[in-house]
Image 1 (cartoon, rainbow, N blue to C red):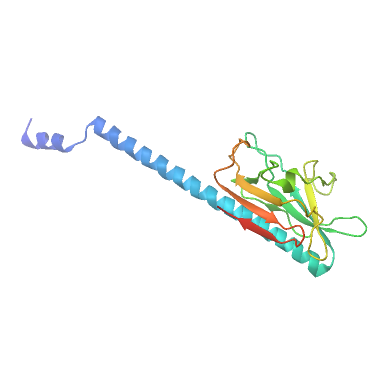
Image 2 (cartoon, rainbow, N blue to C red; image 1 turned 90 degrees about the horizontal axis):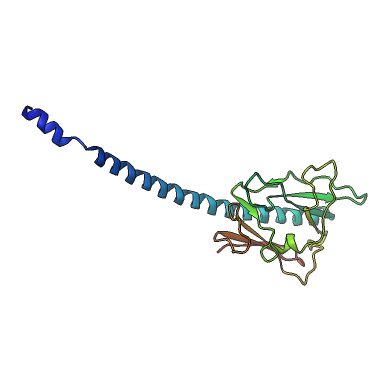
Length: 201
């Protein structure tokens, strides 16, 4: 074996060294992906809560501007297989004197990372609100789980003012309702004024 061959062998990596480098890289990639997923999830929670606040604000403004009643529908769209249940869509409708309820805007679908938790202690606006809208052929999202309330022409709601009404937006991957989600945002609705506000830890 000449000197050049021996020098080349000394400069090359062994299989164990290559495996060690690949393992370290795999661990680093896994850590980065976990951190990225956490950031995306946190952003989706904030975005979802903001979407709900915007829609509620719009519903109140429409009721006042048009001097009419606006119906807010909260939908429990059937989740994908293996996903935790939760409400993930809402839509504004006009409540006409003849009883018809044409849509005032397109349905708002929350980001796929998040849902509105239906648990009573986290979202009384869903769990403690007895108002529902019976299914009909015009809106395929309507089912027995759909919750409704109304903004009145003066900007207030038809919700009981003695109750603290709010919704909690959480990660869709949270499957245990007994434990409060680590990442969440709360949208509170004042029943007397109809004003919505987001609380984010």
